[in-house]
Image (cartoon, rainbow, N blue to C red; front, side, top):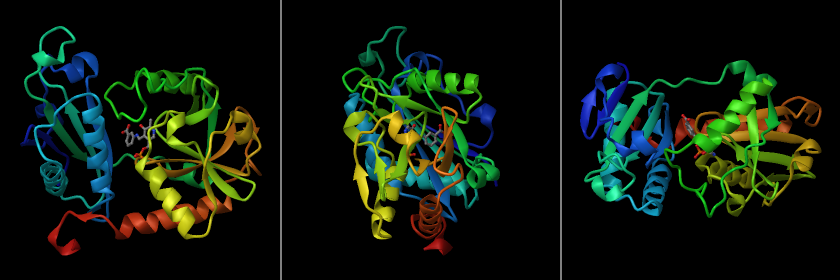
Length: 296
Ligand code: PXG
């Protein structure tokens, strides 16, 4: 029982043994794509959606993954199963592969496929109960015509610069705007507000990663009777919102109680958030691709 890493189909159980060549363009240029996936209670949550997004990201950067979606799914499940864990964090990385010192991707003959399956480092429990504080970052999200945010690429410097600002301000997370000043997302999570009896989240065209958790929350919210709107909004709308929360595979749903030193609503996690978190956790516990025979 413990972490397992698959490097091009070979399995390792020690961090220090799982290695990639320094000439890999994933390391040299951030040239590649990835997914962050979770398994709960012996089931991989929304595996099909993650693999589909991985292949779409790869297609967009003209990276041909040398395996079918089914093969990648099988390898992902196999790697996660070898940990023996029921709750697993899975990091799936496909890089351009080993090449020359130069950008030219044609020099990289074979993409590298790495799957890390490890225990999950969760946000502290009190953050879910008390909520987090966020700030608006001055670093803007990349424009869709420079590096499209829909590509879950290995090039996360845009988000890391915003994260550095967040840390400097002493906040838990940072909100990033697009070049027109509309709210996009947090540094590694999508954002929702509850405002005037409806749940609002920015639409994909504003420049976000269309999160799988985000889409699941939209689905759940509609099912339990919420009105959901995908609509651009500004920081001013967050200041005046009744509730706000972030979503992502790592964080699940986490309540935001303060932004730029202004309390959101009554400054406590909201009732709509609590209902949605409950429904989300029920779904993650009970659905997904089984890792072990007895989970089927
Ligand atoms: N926006 C960005 C920029 C992200 O990186 C999300 C939104 C949420 O997407 P999902 O599909 O997860 O709902 C992400 C997700 C990590 C890690 O270890 C990062 C993400 C997800 C899981 C792990 O850094 N980012």
